Amino acid sequence: MAVLPFDTVLRDFEIDGVPSSGGHAISKEDFRDSLNALQVFFASRELAEAATVSSATTTLLLAHNGRVLSYLEESSASEPALTTADGRLWVPADEFITFDHFGAVADNATDCSAAMQAAIDYAAAFDDGATVHGLPGKYAIASQLEWLPGVSFELQAGCVIRAKTAMYAMLNVATGASSRIKRVRFRGGKMDANYLAERVLFLKDYEAVEIADFHFTDCDVNYIHLGTEGQSANNYEARIHDGLLERSADNNFDVSGASPRGIYFDLTGSNSDALISDVVILGCKTGVQGQIYGSMISRVHPWSYVPTTGTMETAFRLVGDNNIVSECYADSFSLYGYHFDGVRNVLNHSLTNASSYHDDDTGGCVLLSTGSSLFATGNVFRSSSPDHRISKEFDGDTSSLIADSNQTQNIVSVFGDQGIGKTEAYVAFTTNTGADPTIETETNINGITRNSDSDFSITFNRQMASTAFQVVVEATPSSYPGIIIPVIRDKSVWMARVQFLDETGEFVEPATVAVAVKGTVTI
Image (cartoon, rainbow, N blue to C red):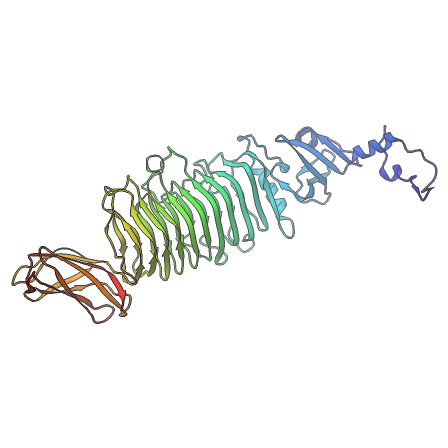
C-alpha cells in the first residue's frame, strides 16, 4: 500500500465542523502508515547506507555499538554523517554529535581515525563551533586527529580512545592563525597512548583552552604538550585541572632520556597565564616542565613508584618569571623537587618527600638557576627516612632567595627557619693557635681571618635580601660557649665575628669550631 503524504491524510480534517476540502475517507491505516514513514529504523549502518528511503521519511534511527542513534536529513550538508543509497544526506539529530554518528566502532580494534575526524570536521563547520561527544566504549585510532577551531570534546565515563600504531600525537592542533583554537575545552574520558603515540594532546596554537576531568595513560614523550616554535601568537590561558597522567606499573621509562614529561610548555614557544590544579602525574621523568610566565600551579602531585615506573628526576622544572606554585607535592624524586629558572617566582605551602629509594645525602628540595629569585614560605621539605636524606634544602644561586618559616626533616644542609631573608652558610674550622684558621668544611664562606687570640672574623660569599635584616648565627666550639658579633656593611658585604669564653668569663680559644648561619630576622 502506498504511503499517503500528510498533506493528503490531513486535508479533510474538519475545521469548526466543516471539512477543509472535498470528500475523502481517511482510514486509521493511512494515518498509521504516514506516521511510521516519518522515521525508519535500521539494524546496522551498512543496511542504512544500502537503503533507498521513502520521500516521506524525515528521521533515521540506527542501531550502532549497542545503542540507537538518530539522524535528520540535511540536503545541504557539506560533512554528512551518513549517506543512503538514494544519495540523501543525513546528520546527527538535535546537534548532539558523537563519533558513533560517523561510523566509529567501539571494538578496541577497528581504526576509527577517519570516522572521528569526520565528526570533528562536521562540528567545525558550525558558525559558532560545536561539541563532539564520546560515548562509552573502546575506540582505536591509527593516525592522529586534528583538533579544529570551534570544536570542544566531551568524553563520557567509559569512553576510551587508544592509539594502535605509532603517531606524533593523538590529538593535534596545528600552527597558524587559522588553526588556533580559542575558548574550547577537552573534558572527560580516557586517552591511552599505548606507548605508541608520542603525545596525547599537542596544542601548538591556543588561547583560553580548558582540559579537565581527564585520564591520559602510557605516553613516552609528553602527555600534554603546549606551544611550539612557529606558533602564530603568544599562547595563554590553558586551564588544566582534575586529571590523572599515569604510566602503568611494570613499564619503566628510559631514565637516560629527557622524557616522559607530564605537562610540557615548549621551550621554543611562549606560554603564559596558565592555571593548573588538582592533577596527579605518575611515572614521568619530569612532572611539570617548560617555559611559562605569570601562571598559577596548585595541588599538583607528581610522583614515581620507582620499582615499576622509573625514578622521577625533578617534579617541577619551570623556566620563566612571575609564577606561583602553591600546595603542590613533589614526591619520590631523585634530583630536585622544584627547579626555578626565572625571577619573582613564589613557592608556598608545598611539600617534598624523598622515598626509601632515594640515595642518601643527594639531591635538593629546591634548585635556583643563576640569576633566579624566589620567595619560599610555609613549605615542608622532608625525606621520609633518615637513611635516605636529601642533601640540600635550597641549592644553586640563592643570592636572591627569601625563605620564611619552612619546616624540614632529614635534610642534610638546611637553609634556616628563623624568619624573613634566610641564608645558608656553614663552616667548621681548626683554630690553629697563633695562626690563621684552617677550614675543614664550608658552605658559602669566603674566608676566615684571625683578629686576635680567641677572636675570628668569618666572611660570607652571598648577598643578603636587604640590610634591614640581621644575621642569626650559632657557634659550637669544642668546649666553650661562643659570642657572635654580626657585622653588616651592605647587602653583599657581611660577616660574623666569633669569640669564646670559659666558665670564668675569660676569653679562650677552642681547638675546633663549627659556625652555622641559621637565618636572618628583621631588625
